[in-house]
Image 1 (cartoon, rainbow, N blue to C red):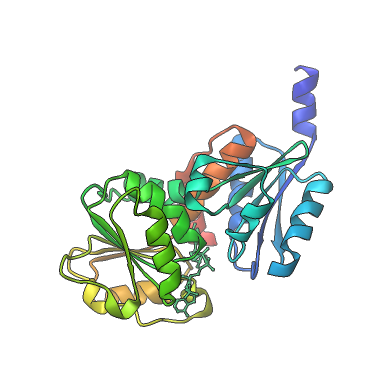
Image 2 (cartoon, rainbow, N blue to C red):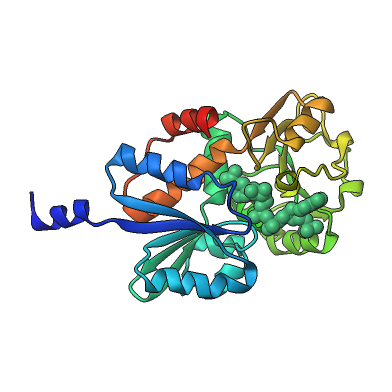
Length: 283
Ligand code: NDP
């Protein structure tokens, strides 16, 4: 064994996830399972940070030797401000969910989009080419997933949001790259049935069910909730109630986006299947 490899196995590198609230996050469990599986010596912390303390907390984590952070609700857009080098996919998204501390610099990436795509296409076998897609919500997660979804050449992406302005700004930003439009929940066009309906609101975290557009769900609509829980989420229950044939929670996206972050940080890609299985049972 070389001196370098001795150092690698005896040094604990620190990572964590920052959000507000954060107690529901399963990221520490997932990263511990990845670390065990791949033999990486890491520590992963849960960090509750309010919006006004975000910059101080990120810089302190960096100053005290932290190697990387996941960034979650509601900080993904705001944290972009602190980043020195932004990956292409984070720039396209205008949102960052993965920070790497490289020397004195902060590198920002976005693994949400690739995480969702891997779950939809690889794990669940959903066809995105020529699909009509409805996204409910226009926050950081939506910003992260539109670019990758557009690369799969869907027929259309409709973004519906409580605040029309945020959906309209996203549609405007992405309409150069493909067919993206915006509306309120009450004005979702239903002339063409939606093949895929994605809930990207955070309403379920608070147990709320906004006035989602029931007429948008047909017998061919695959429903996917970015939120997840051991019990069906409010959106999953709603989707089943209004006739969706399949309604899946975002466990797969969670594990896949974490795997992408882990491989950015550690240079090794974990096998997600056993971790996903374990998460759904024991989370
Ligand atoms: P943001 O805070 O950036 O955006 C929240 C969105 O939810 C906004 O569009 C907001 O609408 C909408 N919203 C919140 N409450 C309500 C409500 N009561 N009624 C209607 N709309 C509401 O969050 P993110 O985009 O970062 O995350 C969204 C969700 O996706 C979260 O639940 C998050 O946990 C989940 N997620 C899951 C991932 C996974 O790996 N499975 C990865 C990333 C996110 P408005 O603009 O009107 O305020």
